[in-house]
Length: 212
Ligand SMILES: C[S@@+](CC[C@H](N)C(=O)[O-])C[C@H]1O[C@@H](n2cnc3c(N)ncnc32)[C@H](O)[C@@H]1O
View 1 (cartoon, rainbow, N blue to C red):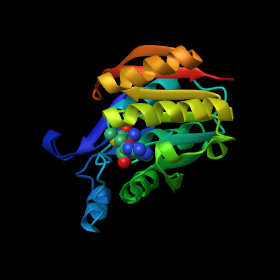
View 2 (cartoon, rainbow, N blue to C red):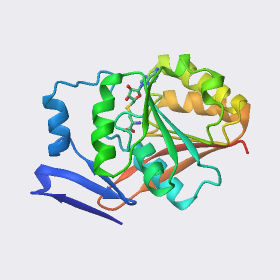
View 3 (spheres, rainbow, N blue to C red):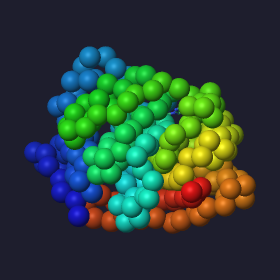
């Protein structure tokens, strides 16, 4: 299911998972971006494991509508990059922190695709900017108390704008559950336990809302 390359386990430079290359911080393409002085400051500092959960879910449950995808709080952007590569989606990679985009670009290059970077905060994202998006994906974006309301309201606006499916993964932080339980009460949907095993090991919860 996965393969690992690098000189040794202690110098792992990349993983392959579900058809995408996922570089670690030691990968030469990533080291080059760091050397250029880019320093994300809101935790967009690596590929977080929750992205494995979204990718695995979408691999096992191919979305019916995925022509246009928004990866919200993209960080280095692997979830959206997977959609661009495997679903042939046109992807907007959104983050509040523009310092993540050189990393996004390096990861996209390694995968032979590109996505459109967009600097915006969840709380400022308007319904009109969400109109036309088929699928919203996100991984590990509800990690502070201050994010519960902005992420919940972004979901409300996405549903209002006609986004057809929302898939958000999390390592099960209480803040995520607070946000997700409200979203399910308001819009329906499922909260799923999810686990990926193998050379890549990740577990957590997925919020899946269908709005088609
Ligand atoms: C833990 S990282 C996860 C990154 C990526 N989704 C992944 O799984 O590798 C959280 C990301 O959310 C972004 N973020 C945090 N608060 C945000 C906000 N209010 N609006 C937009 N992006 C935000 C951060 O800059 C960071 O890139």
